[in-house]
Structures are given as structure tokens and as C-alpha cells.
Image 1 (cartoon, rainbow, N blue to C red):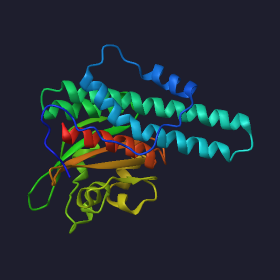
Image 2: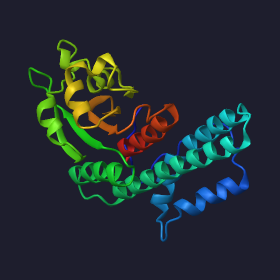
Image 3: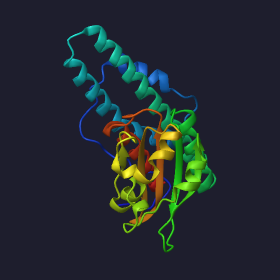
Image 4: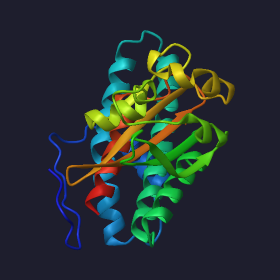
Length: 247
């Protein structure tokens, strides 16, 4: 259930305690340290990073425990730490934009630019649900490569049309994130596959934006490589989305 904010964010409590070793935790803390954080920024960053940090590290260490070659395990760990650091840096910048944006459009545009410039994504955009006959999803903010893709996408949140059966339409109707691991083969991308591949979109995620039980719109982003997202990374971004809608 969503709640209106009255000046401060409700702190979400997550089960369990962090199992991060001290040296790993210290490395991550140093890499995302930012000067002069306000209490509100610190609170938002804590909410956004807490759950996914433990989950990603847990997944990473479980994978490494199954490997027989220590050098390969170390290399994998370093890659995962680098990926985690980039996610946390992205979340921090998004939370900073949340605190300082003067209006909704500025916030959405800032988030799209951060996802591309800091997060290394190929495209990010925010859409708004329209109550027209076609149940159009109208882009209101966007950043990245191949922005003309959105001009021709004609995405819908309606169930009656083929263009409502894609990631955006499904996420908006179910209220849950929907991601495509490989745009070359996922059937939900059929109407947009040719244009997506031509612009180097290899995988994508759509997060529904729902406030106070009402379907508002979506946040969608695309990566240049297949399988760029997993449940842990999507949870990270989903926590930020929850933070945004309670602000």
C-alpha cells in the first residue's frame, strides 16, 4: 500500500543482516562516498542500497563457491563488485536528483540521463499512461542513443492491441517489473524487434510507476548486451522507484 509523505520517508526494514566481509564493505563504502550528504539523501541511499547489496553479494559468493579455479573466482568477484559499484553510483545520483528536482519533468529527465551517463545504459525513458482510445504510453522524458525509436514505437498499455503486449504494457497491467533478456528472441518484442536490434538494444527492463493504486506510467531502460539484468539489479532499481513514489 502506498502512503503520502509528510516531510520524511518511511524507512523500510529488511530481514536479515549484511554478510559482507569488512574489506569488501569498506571498498564499496569508499567507492560510493560522497561529501556533504544531507540526512534526507543518506536516508534515501540507505533505503535504495540495503536490500540489493546483500542479495547481489550473496548471489556472487554462492557462484564463486561452486567454482574450482580460484583465479577465475577472483576475476568474477571483481567484475561483480565493479557492476555493483556502478549500480550504487547510479542509485545515488538518482536519489540526489529526487531530492533536488524542482518538478516532475526535471526529475524524470535527470533520471534518464543518469541511467545512461552513469549507469552505462543505451537508452532510458519515462512514459505516461494516456486515457485515450488507444491507451497510449506517451514518452515524457528520454536520454541515450536512438531516441527516434520512441517516435515510432507507438506503445500501448491496453491488452487488446499487439503493441500492448510488450514489456511496457505487461508491466503496467500487472504492476510488476518486466524484463527481456535477449531482444533477438523474446516474443514480447516482436513489433519492435527490427528497430531495437538496429539501435543496439540487446536487453531491456520496464518498471511500472504506480502511485496510490493508480497506474501513472513507466520507467524503461535498455542495455547494449543480452542478459544485462537479473533479479538483484532489478530489485535495486525497483527500490528506488518505491522511494520516488513515496516522496
